[in-house]
Length: 74
Image (cartoon, rainbow, N blue to C red; front, side, top):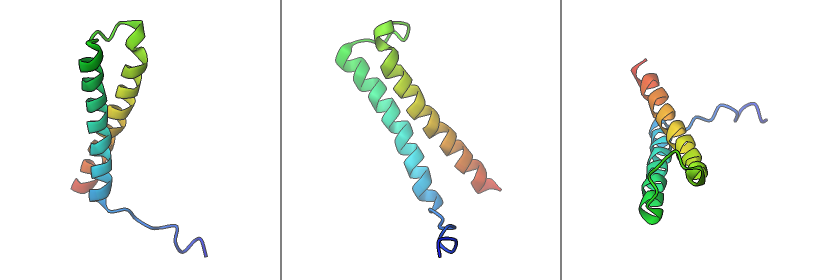
């Protein structure tokens, strides 16, 4: 029955590691793009796409880490 297996929980440490990986990946992409193309100006139109990717990855990573940290305290 599908209802019996719908409540499978992923361990908190695995989820924290996944969110930390997203945060790290966002920072790695930002730093590597800046080093390779020497473009640290966020206001240039040519860099808009890479900063959008960086903000999404770092945002999901940071929010996920904060939410799982708050969940541990309760």
